[in-house]
Length: 332
Image 1 (cartoon, rainbow, N blue to C red):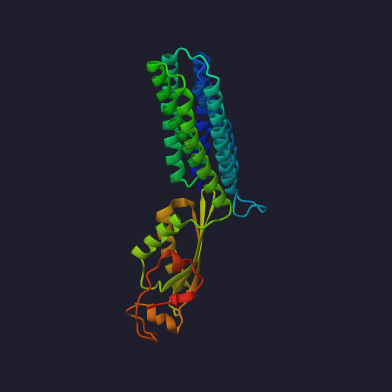
Image 2: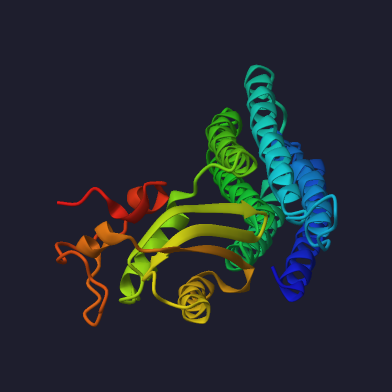
């Protein structure tokens, strides 16, 4: 990750944290005016926004630190920890909302000034969604899980707020107080699911789980731009450290290339990855020399050292490039 990306991520998350505090105050005012439990639960979820916003802000600060002796791969894993905490808080908020809604269903509260409350809550929904969209857009561009998690959290908050506005509108028009609790419970389950997906993604990052979407994306580009000297590709691994993607693999090239020629092939291979993933990619390519049996899968037309007739070029896919089996031995 470049310094400019790290700085942008930090600035965006700082905006998210400031917006979270401002909107929390707005929702508390709306609850004080309406006495609606649905609005209260929305405000309770916003407390999670505030806490999670500052946790993510700190994690991005840590992740942007340069590498040192104790952290040779950088501090990017801090983003996964942050996302795990934020996802957990989102899930807990969902269960708190369910509890409050059930309690209000059993012991209904008097609701007032719903029209003014709807205007205030509607305003917070618009600001939340716009801020969340910007955070997700920036996070995806810079491969920042912390920013994406913050953005999804804000947008899930928007959806729950829309549900609360709908409940308030129904209550305002019909006087059905029980709708206050029913709609709050429905959106609480959606919030819990959002929290689960954030936690699941963060655990996958912490455990270095294979990112099949990234692998599919990379292998598609390599097949599209494959050169004659790229006989085979295997043992490819992708690991994400926050916003930095580490890729390592073995590339089989003709054995008779000198060091400079082999290095040029590796550079061409690396350039494709950088075009796909930007400055945040770190590529480590080990060049293997081809062997006699490699001729069967090599379609290099001008090869003067061919020992076997070309039979079939192995199309790279996620399975065979991830395998440590050399030179695509399984053909036919």
